[in-house]
Image 1: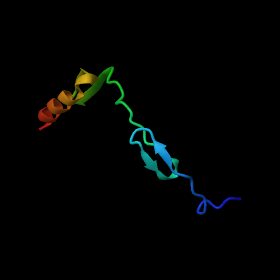
Image 2: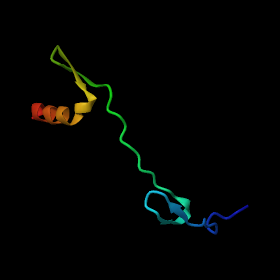
Image 3: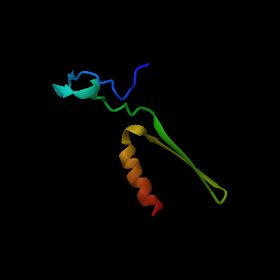
Image 4: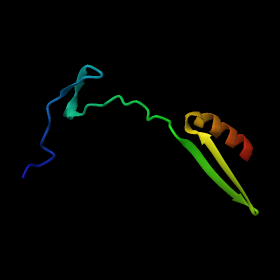
Amino acid sequence: MIDAKTVSLPPVINPVAKSLVPGGFVPLALKAPPKDGDIRIELHRAGTRVNIVWPAAAAAEYAAGLRDWLR
């Protein structure tokens, strides 16, 4: 059995940063996931129901508007 405390991996070249990275870890630059679809919220209060549908691509604007509305 190999003791994990005594095992060391050789450094590898990080293709993104072009530098040595100990232990073989290579960080990857990932694109943000696409913001397809909609944000859907259903609110119930005192017998009233409100459905809100907003494009996910405009999530920041929706959050700002919702924050102002809830004040």
